Length: 419
Ligand code: EPZ
Image 1: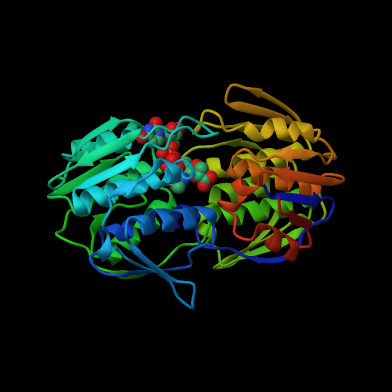
Image 2: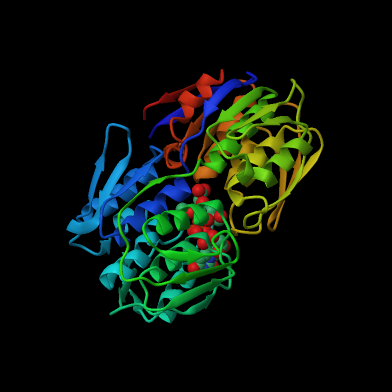
């Protein structure tokens, strides 16, 4: 397994270009199953999860071509299988996103249950309940979801828990249903809005994306389209934290500041000086050590759970006591044990981590357990004294395009050791 070796102590300086958002690219790729014609998607990040999704669609018989401008042209006309196997789904839970489109367009789907995950049990009961309410004959057997529907019917769906991919799956299913669907307590994440805009470009009749009530009037068919994926707000915020934790000055380009208000607020509280343009954000710590902050994760527009691990690392070397409360997932502190190996003084009580910031972390061999945990270990390595070795970095390759190249551009001393 590949490892990353990071020699800490270098304040990061310079500019970095942000890639397209993983969590928008994945549902948008799934949405191509709904279209009668080819869909061309640009600004797709080059990530393991994207490759996995392309593999999944390819095995169904969907045609995918990457053109000279790195755009992906997807044509589902040649589809011949409606099956998502466990061997792929177990590597990427977002594979569940093919369920709604397959049912809506082809009336059938056999999709492996995603199974467990490091950060929580992450059930898909709300996806299944919603599709059943839309008239699908859906049952779980042998670790697979078996679903059939002559034609889905519009329904009023109330989601007990705010679920991003649950909202996305049901929104996609509703585009071709007979009648109108209203999704209440819908997720408001920008990636949900990006998917909705892509569906509208394909001819869907959809309003309310970005609010907690989304209304979809089913149509007979959707056409091909061209669509550009929005920038990755979590990648943007991760590089801003990299600047903050090392006391440097970094500009993230090709991003969308309006998607990051809750995070930017906390970075200012931590002592960062921000300069913000239309599609860039510059963070300058002026060589100062960050102040500890209190963070509580919650669905958008509140502070994102996908930035929790990174702020845990920031608080580990900040001045003062930081408090991190995780309300979205039940087990998203896997990075804490690894940060403790680097000297971090963290106490976890239930869903809250109390972090007593120390001047210097010490390099150590550490192990990535999930995507954002691995990002927090890289951030800690950037500021720790000595050479930190982060193992199992296949986790990080799922969500950060060319992370060592981008960090090296900012002056980090980091290299990948093929394993
Ligand atoms: C999406 O996961 C993201 N992944 C996650 O990003 C992100 O952390 C999460 O939303 C929350 O923002 C993608 O978009 C591909 P949820 P998702 O359904 O949709 C419970 C990353 O690091 N729930 O919004 O799987 C669930 O257990 C990844 O990029 C049910 O109970 O998350 C959790 O407690 C990690 N039943 C809460 O809802 C369901 O049917 C939120 O989960 C569905 C969810």
